Image (cartoon, rainbow over all chains, first blue to last red; front, side, top):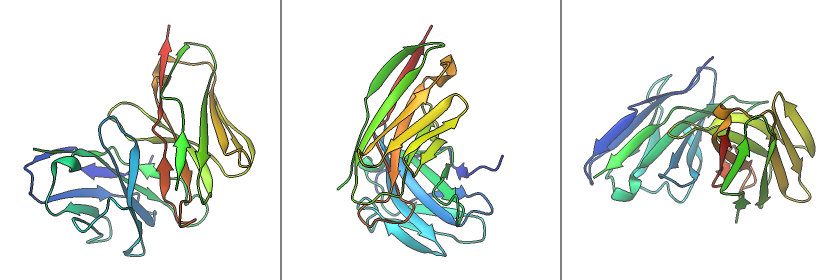
Length: 115
Length: 113
């Protein structure tokens, strides 16, 4: 079964450092997303991406965050200067275009720990 | 704004039936989803309701009433592996569109012998 692949599975970084989380969405999917889940809390929407541009973003997705699709397969989330409160599990997701576009398939997540 | 409420925890017995309720208040609505999430893992899709009524999928069923802002997930013939968090999520927020999912806090289900 096709799956969304995320790397790294776990990253530990120092506060103020830049972090890039990588995702390979399902190949025929056209919508891409990043969500995050702080330990013990709910899954929160960060950003959606379609046709090489951001289609929607949340208040959490401030200037410290950016997304990019650098080639035909990867979708990345960059945090420029990490803060302690950025520690969370970051989930990438993707969905098709058209019927079924609402059903998101999530990756296994990248756990970010900021020290 | 958006508000999605579901119980924090539930406990049920193996082989039994359990119903997990979800109520929502959103300014836009394009469908309600149930996801299953085991600890430390990604949410996995269970069901999707956009029209009122019951959707059945094997041991899992989901019901939606849009007029009441209410849904439930019904799990039958519970198995130990069903112990997980069950997330209610709604698509369609303040902008009323897009594929942005807003999640509830999840219901942690514990299945006991």
